[in-house]
Image (tube, rainbow, N blue to C red; front, side):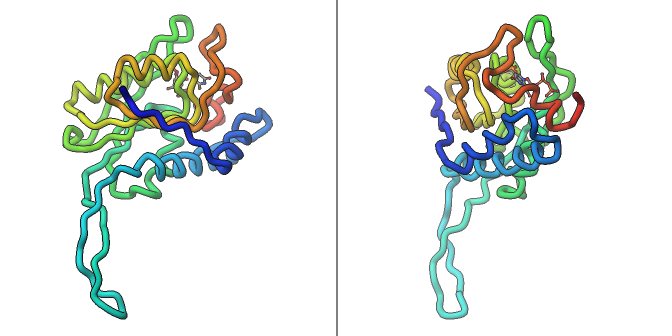
Length: 209
Ligand code: PRP
Ligand code: URA
């Protein structure tokens, strides 16, 4: 079964409280999404492997730990996932970026894929799939299925707000994928929106409504 981290940190709670507020404007919304993504990235990369090397400080020779340099990739689910990329790149600047474009059909709530461009060596990389919202879980599940079809074996999903319905579906369909969640909300409404949620993440990041 996948490991789920639900971020339990006052800074994250505070920042999520601001983006939930409908009076928060696009600029602040985008900046805070970036900050939350960076904080979630910090926690989600806890398992990265280190190796020892010898260096010289100005005082003496010593052994220090450095990242093993495992190849990483960040894959945002368009559009809203784009908002999380800058925060992730701040901490893992050498990660390659792939893009999977999906929108939810408003009637069926099923995801429709319209774009996929991944690094050529994606199957060799540990992949962080990012999308602020995990609602029914359809978009995340399909994006991860697509990545597995490209040969990816080590995938983690990161979101800012999850509905219990989406979390359960993702764990059931992809039990090998560990998940990082900023906040676990109450339920989905009849239109597939997360309650209390923050509304349409894509529209709020890009100012399209
Ligand atoms: C939103 C969100 C997720 C999806 C979540 O995208 O960013 O990708 O909905 O819903 P699900 O878990 O039920 O699939 P949307 O389809 O609104 O597209 P957008 O990012 O282009 O606005
Ligand atoms: N997508 C969003 O952007 N918000 C939701 O609440 C559900 C899906």
